[in-house]
Structure formats: structure tokens, C-alpha cells
Length: 322
Image 1 (cartoon, rainbow, N blue to C red):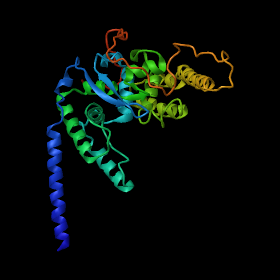
Image 2 (cartoon, helix red, strand yellow):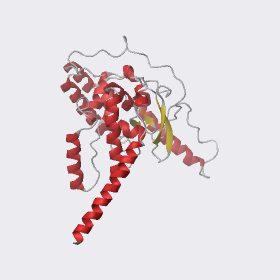
Image 3 (cartoon, helix red, strand yellow):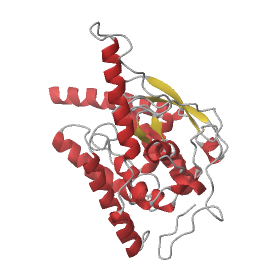
Image 4 (cartoon, rainbow, N blue to C red):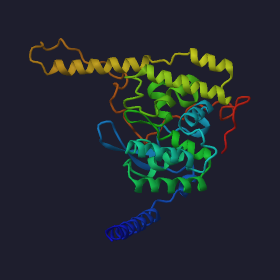
């Protein structure tokens, strides 16, 4: 008879939890406002030291990149690498979720999430990063609502403007300038693949300062996906493979970081005569790993538009739904 008692208790707990989740879903914020491309909302993002900072998502962010200013190679690099079924599902990839559940049960952890791009947008804009069933339920619910209210183009625009690409570097607009010193519209296919390759782990696993070869190898894989999909022609694919991303800016930041560490160490040493240590040059860029200064409300001249607005679709390339 004990098992019946436990069964009743278990059913009761499940019912209470279901009510709790239902109430939580009812009080989730609306997503309708995101349809307006002039909308600005402030979210909290965590830096690499664990501190939270406000980040404006919308045109008031100086690094905001409208969809028309993002190359098709960048959009497709992210889609093919992160969510190949983006244009087929309605916010939730059921097959991927089943595979993730099976994998997590085998590993007895939440090792694989199977989140679609839409789910990631929902999480980044409205939810915390905690790995719980309640948060996952909220994420799935918001993703379905987004797919009902927003176009695929708007969803990918939001995604590309909140992705983490470095220390307090969020969005393709900031990432393009931080790593390559150019606007998103000027990115080459290799640079697009390079940035997309960092997404699984820009802090450690795919941090170009620490694992450049690993990032390049994954970017080669993404370029191949772009060629197979028809986004790149055979000639463009070979040219992109032959191109080496300009990592000079990265190396300069690393060198400056080392220089500043050495200077600070010498300043605190009583054995170094005063005047023998020179100040680091000002205005040479951010040190590697240091949070980039953010001025969300500041204004900056918009990136130059490609001729005739958005980059023209290549012959044979898949057409993007809006």
C-alpha cells in the first residue's frame, strides 16, 4: 500500500508544479512590442567577472545593426551552424529536443539544450540563464509566441544583435568593430564564418585569443556549409578558404594587455627606479579580455549601406523569409 501513497503524493506534487508553471507563464512579458523595429528594451548581461551590466537592445544602441546592414553570409553562417531548421520549425525543434532529452538522460545532466534561435532570443531578452525545467518551459512558451507575432527576419535580427562575441561584446555590430575594425556590412565571408564559429563558447572553447586554430577550423566547416547551401559559389568558397582573417588587431590587444600588466607590476615594485617605466600609449584599443566600454545610448553614424540597401541575393542562394 505504500507505493499507492507515494503515487498519490507524487501526483499531487506534479499537479502543484503544473499550477505553478501555468501561473509563471501567465505573467511572462508580452512580445508584441518587438514587432516595432524602433522598440528599445534594456536587458542585463553578465561580464566575464560575473557582474551584471545593462545592455540596450534596439536602435538606441550605438552598435545596433539593422537586418539590411548584415551580409547574407553572416545570417546564413549563424543559421546553418546554430539552427539549420530555422526556416522550417515554428520556434521549437521537436526532433532536436527528443535527441537532447535522450542525451541528457544518458549523461544525467542538462548537457544539451537543443535550443532553436528563437528560443535563444527568448532566453536572452526575457529569462535568466539558470538550467531548470521551469525556465525551459518559459523559454518554449515565449518562442512559440514570438513565432506567432514576429517574422523570421525580425527574429534573426534580434538574435544577431544580442549574441555574445567577446568580453562585453554583444551583437554583430560590436563584434565586427571589435575584431576587424569595420562595420557589419563590410564583413567578408571568411570574417562572417569566423564570428559565427565563436558562438558556442567565446569565453574559452572558441575564444580566438586562446584557441585561434580551433576557431579557424570551425569557420572552415561553416564556409563549407555555406557553399553546400548555395550561399557561396565555388569560386567564393575557395577564396574565403584562402583568406586569413586579419588577426593583427587581436594580437595588438594581447600585446597591450601584456604591456599593461608589466607596467602595473613594475609600479608596485620598490626596486624599480622612478622614471624607467613608461606609460602605455593611450588610445590603442582595448586589452584582450577586458570589458569593452559600452555607451548604449550614445549615437554613432550608421554603417554605410550596401548599394541598393540590403546585399543582393546571390544566384542560387536560398531566399530568406521575412
